[in-house]
Image 1 (cartoon, rainbow, N blue to C red):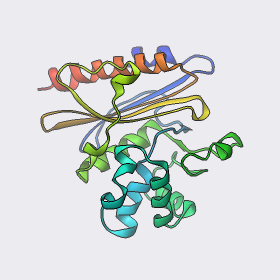
Image 2: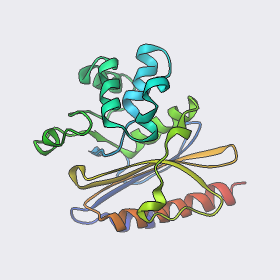
Image 3: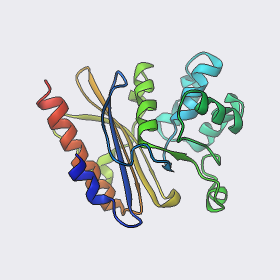
Image 4: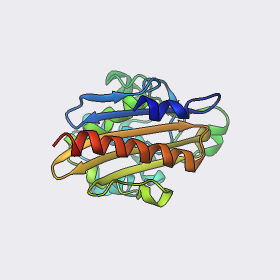
Length: 216
């Protein structure tokens, strides 16, 4: 896997990849998996914080946060969590040390003025395992193949994709076959859409072969 990922790390171009099993055990973390990088398309923090702060799933009125990456509903959820400061306090308390929110979803002006949302691929992978534990990973519905990502035959992929913020192109994915689920996160900066899709395709191929086909 290092041989795949490291070819995308050069000069101002960065890539980080994390793979975790659904029981929150790391299977692979690339050399930059713990680095703080611009986060695009990461809608998990306000959703997961709601569970702890309110005591139940926000699915009823907020399902579109996960199903269609709804900025307005995600921002409403942040308000219900107690606002940005409360969300960042929750992240710190749960050891998501590289994940911070500097602006609301869709606030392009704040982003352009240096108020960034950040995460690491390790942080995001751990969040996805928590979503699996709550049985709500099936709400992730972005079709990664629309970007040119190749999904292995037989694999089901539930995903979010983010792009554009700080030159980021990110994928947050749950790969499954039957009851077995593996989390895969790919974060990139300074990569083209085609490069990010190629990296993600190669990572999925490796995960599928090593953890599903050979690991059965």
